[in-house]
Length: 123
Image 1 (cartoon, rainbow, N blue to C red):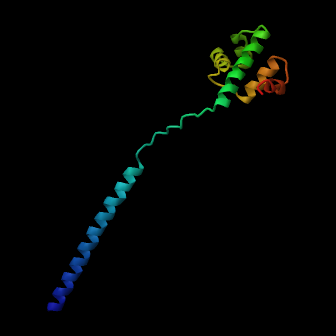
Image 2 (cartoon, helix red, strand yellow):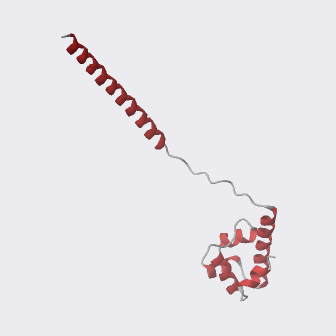
Image 3 (cartoon, rainbow, N blue to C red):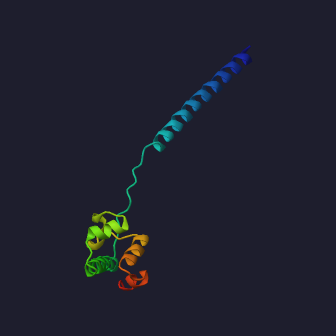
């Protein structure tokens, strides 16, 4: 008789241990899941510009401005021919941004020079 009581006690203790273990696993699982669901905001690293790059940007803007004015064109005329805004042309000339490769090629065609010649002026 005492063996069956001991067996029931052991069985009850084992089931209780399993329930407690299941609860702990459940808590850990949802804690990890919740921490993984937090939305992270992507903050791109600040652009580091070397002095050489800054010099190239300035010289590119100066070259674009000189070529445009040398051809007697306005920023608006250039923008319309390239399919960009006048503000984009202004940013290129101020060195705030740079035209894409396709826009550089289109600029060279507009000024009737080979794209290589435009790029050679940078060096």
